[in-house]
Image 1 (cartoon, helix red, strand yellow):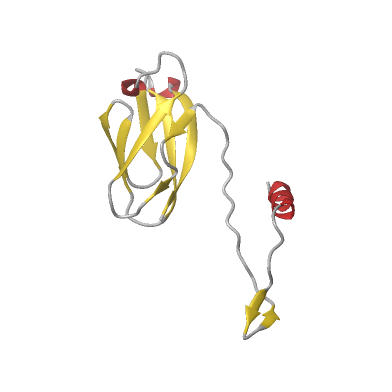
Image 2 (spheres, one colour):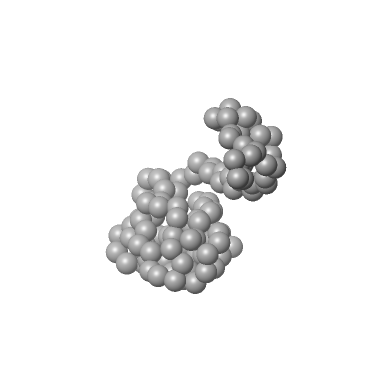
Length: 122
């Protein structure tokens, strides 16, 4: 992944040097990079706001999968199913959380995992 980030940054526009009182100065910038892996899960947003309810639509692109067939969990915070593909997520503090989508079955060990998606909480 590091090699891919370096390629992307080098292909991007030239960066301007930091300037202080009209002179260029050495500066350090930590550049966050988010990797998105294509999966069967589609979300209406990938950014949430901490401390308030966030409405989100979660769709699984597989034939015959209904929202009531899904079990959706978060690494931090709470999620409630509203209606259809609509959910509400509440997360207390900024950072990153993971949203995991599985198909409900009668046996926990046989659950089909559709994937995990990272969400940014601001």
